[in-house]
Length: 69
Image (cartoon, rainbow, N blue to C red; front, side):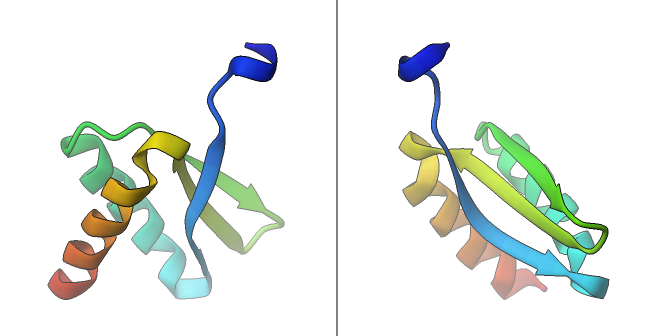
């Protein structure tokens, strides 16, 4: 992919007991057609990333997700 590959942007980070929210959020993204990936930092910090073109849509879905929990 080189220089023209997808750029990934972190849209949410959680740790501890809230880290499970990242997995649920990824399911929401997937059901809405957004590509995402989960990145672990250390043993407790979990991040979810989306491509640069999907950042705005991801933020909208995060707002809906937060209202539901």
